[in-house]
Image (cartoon, rainbow, N blue to C red; front, side, top):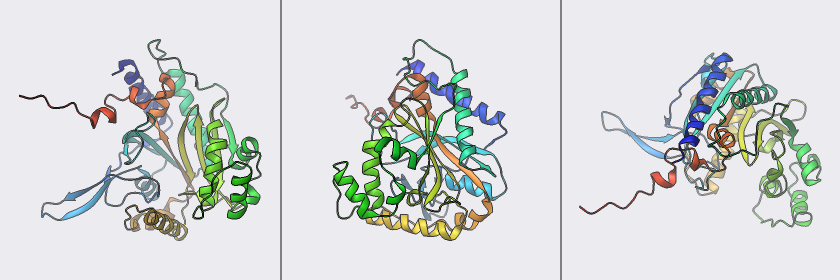
Length: 340
């Protein structure tokens, strides 16, 4: 157990709350146990069962993020809100970058878009970096938060710069993307790979590993097929108003200018549900209360940010196990019981 590392995590949490409180955000503590978690096709909730006093069982899951609850709070009339607490994801690798229980902050604001999310994130990180205790017992970090502005790069610009590819003409064209992957990047393309599958084979091998190494980099304006809960760009619906942040070896944040069209959102949920079934994963009904509330959000934006990953950067470690009091490899691998 590395005491100074663990202290760094606590200090980051304290400073993070201080920054959001000073900016006029209201902290919300949304439920961690829900009957209907998110529909993300590549995240796996922890499932359990809630039993009421009459012995009636109800399926329940620990949240993978507080996103649905926070958006319903926006719809109820709240503005500038954040939730800082534990989230839970099953089937994650225990490779030093993940833990099944981790701290995440999500914040939302009305009358905002991707630009405001990037501004908030950059200002919050700079505040924490400037005020966090510099401690010689923590390892030197190669990834300082610079005083200068973070880099802001569209997905289209990133493909052009790092892969030498004009992405726009390839949008939605599976055969052209497959040909590019095989002939230029020596990737293997399977018959059941869709456009996004092939996109990520190139993105992960040619682009993502280069992002954020020289300076923190926001990547934004994603292909519409990867919109998740983001709205499409007004000027060109082939793109979506989504943003991610890369710093050093980590992807720290994922945010959206929020989709508030319940018809389009329902269709996306059904597609995600079908994809989960295709992958052999558990599926569950859509959250109809969420869909009813969705239009009431108006023009809003929100972003999820990995708290421990920022603490890792400031502590100079690439392993989450160094900053957790009890990492997963210890919690779920107890010592053998001693004989009496």
